Figure 1 (tube, rainbow, N blue to C red):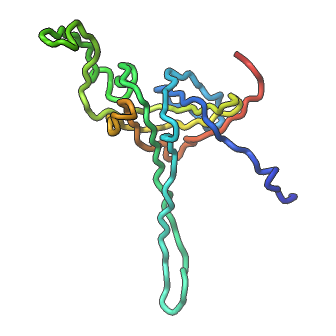
Figure 2 (figure 1 turned 90 degrees about the horizontal axis):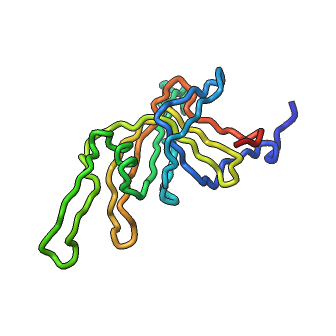
Figure 3 (figure 1 turned 180 degrees about the vertical axis):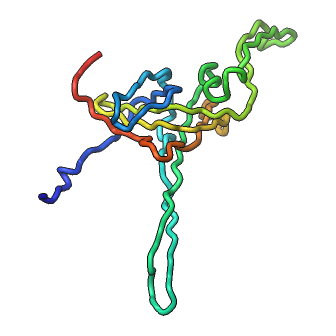
Length: 193
C-alpha cells in the first residue's frame, strides 16, 4: 500500500452554520440509514460550542530492576459537550428543564408610571432535567454534517454580563454511548430538497 499524503488525508469539518437537535438518538453503526429528523435549529452563541475529549488516563506498570514501563494500560478520556443558547423562548426552556418546568403566566401591573399594563410570559422551575438525543452540525456550505448522538446534557441559566449579553441557557454534558458509535461525519453526495 502506498503512503497516504497530507492531501490524501484532508477531510475537514469546519465553519458550522447550524446546530440542529432531535430528541431521538440515531444508529451510527452503518447497519441502516441514519434517521435524522431534527426538531430544533438552536441559536448557539458564536464560539461557545465545544466538543472535547480529555486525555486518556495512562497506568504505568514497572518491575524492579528495569527502567521504564514493563507495560502500560489506559482508560479513555471523558467527552464533554458545551454550548450556549441566548434565548428564553418557552420551547428552549422546556427542552432544557422539562415540559412541566415551564408555565404560562399573566399579570397586570398598576400604580407605576413606567410598566403599567397587562403582561404575559412564562415562569421557570429550575430543576434537574437530562436532555438526551442527537445533534447535527451543518457546515456553512451545507455539504458536510457532523453528527453527535447518545448525548446527555444538563442546563443552567446564564445571565452573567447583562450589559452586553442576553439571558441564555447553557447546556453541558457528555456522550453516553459506550460500545456504540456516537459520532459521524457525512458528506453530501446527491443534491436534494
